[in-house]
Image (cartoon, rainbow, N blue to C red; front, side, top):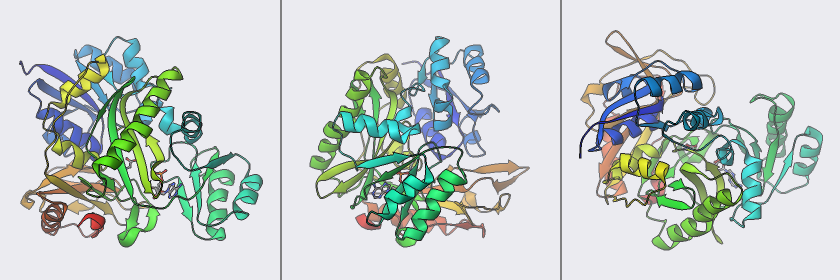
Length: 417
Ligand code: AMP
Ligand code: GLY
C-alpha cells in the first residue's frame, strides 16, 4: 500500500489531536493538514490558519491541495454545512450533512426521532416560553433536567436539585438568552452510570468503536457544573457485551435506520451519550461527531487503519475494525475557573518530562514557551493492562507538569478501579 493519501482534519482540540495521531499511524496516509490545529497538533500535522466555520476557505484549501479526505471534528463546522459544501464540490468529507447533524444540534429533533422510532430515552416536553416552562417544572419532582435546545458546548444542561436552581436555569436560557435565543427541553431524570458509545455510521451501516466513559462535572465526586468533559477511559468494564450489544441494536442501529427512513442518512460518527438504567441503556444525548475527551482514549485502542474506516464510511463499503485490549485513561488539565471565566496565557513547564501521550486541547506557543489558550488545556493519557494501571500511569505523569493555574479531577475512572 502506498503512503500517499492527503488528509485535512478540521478542528483544534484534543479530539482533533487524537484523530491526527491515529491518521499518522495509517499505512495509506502520507500528509496530514489540520485547520486550524494548535501547538501540540503542529508536532504531528501541518497546521493551516483557517477557522473551523470558514466553509469557503476550507473547501478551497481541500480543492487546491488535492485533499483525498477531509475529517470534520467540531459540531460548529457541521452545523455550518461544511460537509454539504465539500459534497457539493465533489470532495470527500467524513462527517454528517447539516440536516443529519441536527441529531446533535437540535435536542427536539433528536427527541422526535427517538419517540417515533422507539429508541429508549427520557420522556420530555419542549418550551420557548419562560412562564409555561417554569409552571411545568415547579409542579414536577426534582431533580429537574433542563436542556438548552441548541449547541452550547456541553454546558447547556442543568440537572437542578432545587426549584431555585431550576428557575434560574430557565431564566438564563429563556429570558436572558445567554446561549442565544432558543427553546428548552425539560426531561425526566434518569438514574444510573453513564457511558459513551461512538459508532461510525454510513447510512444503514454501523461500525462500532470501543466504549468509553466521560466525566462531565468539573470537580471530584461528580460535583460542580457540567463541562465539555474532564477525563475519560476505555474500556468500561461495567458495560458488558450484553449491554453493549443491546445499545448497538436498540439505540445506534435503530437511530441510523431512522435517519435513513427520514431522508437524512447519517455519515460520520454517531455518538450515543447513554445511561445504564434498571431498564437497560437509554439515550441522554446524541452527538454527530467524535466525543472529546473520549476520542483520546478510544482511538489509541484502534489497531486497524483509521483511514480505511473513514473512507469505507464515506463510500458505504464494509470495513472490519480491530481493537487492543489495553486500557487507556486520560485526565484533562483545565484552566482555573473553567467552565466559567478563566485566565489564558499561563506558561506550561516540564511537558517534555512527561512519559505518556499528551493531547493538546487549548495551547499555543510563543517563542519557545508553551502557554494555556483555552478552558480545557491538556489531556494526559496513561496506558495499562487494566483501568487501574492506566490510572496510575496518568497520575504519575501529571505530577511532572508545572503550571499552577491548571486544575484536574483525581477520580477519573473511579467506578472501574
Ligand atoms: P448532555 O449534555 O445532554 O449529555 O447532559 C450533560 C449531563 O447531564 C449528562 O452527562 C448527565 O450527567 C446529565 N443528564 C442529562 N440528561 C439527563 C437525564 N435525563 N437524567 C439524568 N441526568 C441527565
Ligand atoms: N465528551 C462529551 C462530548 O464530546 O460532547
